[in-house]
Image 1: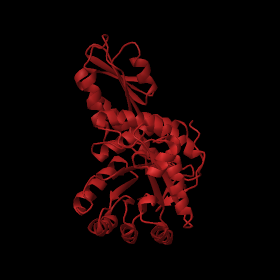
Image 2: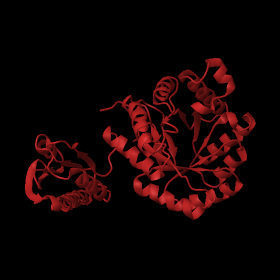
Image 3: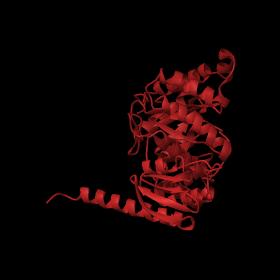
Image 4: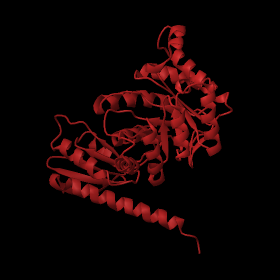
Length: 366
């Protein structure tokens, strides 16, 4: 069990961040916020994928106006992403933003920051202070001799203190870098200096393949240290893939569970079935389920049966056939061509049984 750092709770509507609440999964829409229908469509896709919270860019007054119409119909709480113009922050707050993300240092001075803090406090919404390695001030860079963990932390602390000077403490902090090692050290140092919730991630992580690896390393390492109250996987890809990757990271660390966890063995010279195609087909079919079950697809006679027995449901292959296991017991033998359908049938049966049991427990006793 991972022991998490204790942070103060911050509420985004009814969604709690920090205070030992489950790690919140965020993404950011890549649609034009001014396109209300396209943005709402993507928000629904993110919600279906398991996103808890999404962020919209608000670059101008037209986007701020559209933000309100989107928020009124959104199934998810929404963060307004603001840079430079304090009036857009105020407009987004008026439009119903559940949270705003700013860099206090580029918002135009303490008086304007105080107006934002006052409006946010009145509406009861938090502010995320976002500091990236690529946007440190020249003053900070000169003081620390470049982009260092200490420089990033100092920048975040300065931004945090600007808000605290405005009597505002519903703060979430983030100090992302594209270098996972720099990222990790910066967050480790920051956690020693603050009790505010931490938004973690590896910024500009890359494309779907490389970005998933960098994010899994960077975010996973932080989570294993007990750091992180909310996260975003930043990919040059469909934002839905960010959410799917975030869930995989959290499931791998037993921090949250949603839907099946698929384990499958690597192929080798002993494999006598088309395991790659079968595993890919099972993975695709499992996307319809939300029950947190462990499913094994094994093609090796050495470790396959044992791994399949340890899963809730699994198949282990031999020459042209598979054995189906459930809770460690063999159910039956099926041909290779029947294996995927047979496994999915058993998954569906198990999920239905669990849902019936859960429903029965919720019924009031007579």
